[in-house]
Figure 1 (cartoon, helix red, strand yellow):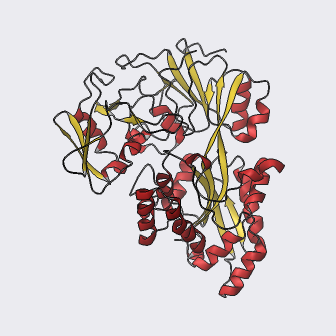
Figure 2 (figure 1 turned 45 degrees about the vertical axis):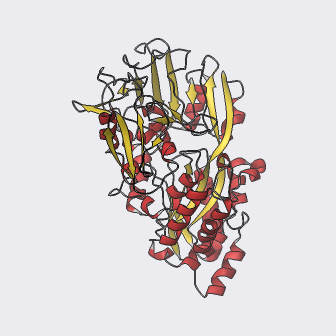
Figure 3 (figure 1 turned 60 degrees about the horizontal axis):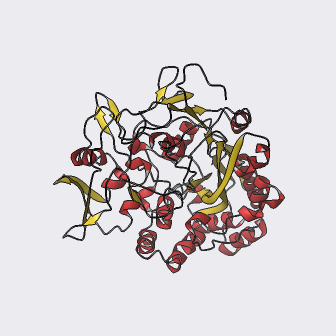
Length: 482
């Protein structure tokens, strides 16, 4: 494999399709930024690739309940150091967590007697799982830079300039890591599109990528790589914005939802064998539980009947914003959007499709709520089903610039106390029967339509050693070798 002359020897090359969104771990929202920054900023716990219970990473033991049942604590791993050699103390961890809204919304964090203490506002049996998420990576601010305890240093633009805008980002080994990485560096390279990335994979210029979809598998024949298909951990979704004046009536939203044929969207994304990807419910197979929502073979005829029974009309015009590129849950977003537009036309609704240029433009639409319909999806952050649902449906997870939460993706902008109570009940029990009222609300209110369950494809070059693929697209490169 030919490498640029300014790369360290034994540099792992990672192919991605988008730039870093932030250099701050508490702002991690997308999987590319998560994969890069998790090499730099360790989280208290880590999720095993098999989806098992959290394991200690920066913390040295599981959370321990104190005398007060709402107080839990754990010590930092002995000898942990930031990349400048300064010790990683309980106080430094508590300070780092003060920036993480997803943690401070549920707990007060402080250092006490050498331990990091979480004073919970309500019981949270999944706190350790929350602390596996990349936005919980611990960072020390020093001279305007953020230092971590992980195996690598913060990304630097290979050719100089702003790392956020750079096409090539280099992570050098952290000289104070608990275990020195075998690699001489990790290079994240942004490719303009999936076809260009696929060509680079065939040319042997990529060691690892999670960015290609199931639809690319057949085109990988002959490439010097080992592709691995992982449990589906994502769902493609059509979101209906309940704040849009055109969609204010739940009866209209339900009728529009009923017009969407998920099997047809599966066909245009995956071909004749794609019916198995049509999503009967919201939760992906990786989470191992679900409840059906509506019919996967919706039809305009059914939708017209719902409108007639309710005595209402479909909107004349709607705009539909697309995710900015192919995803595991939506290999061909444009094809899905066209199918949705064609499904709504018999109702008298003309759909204008808006394709953002890049992730930044896309996020602007999310934060402003400037869409009627939105086709995107969600990849599981944890193996916990309630985390997936809360990100999409909880009132506090409505995406906005003024209330940033890394796990917020309530793009239907649905705020409902009854739904919040149902989500809390499901979090307590993890029982499928408590999913039923949540699924019924989604269907009756026309909040969203699950479209496809995507399979994640992990691709590694045949020269790559000790790479552990993860259904959450989170692989630590500290143990990888070439």
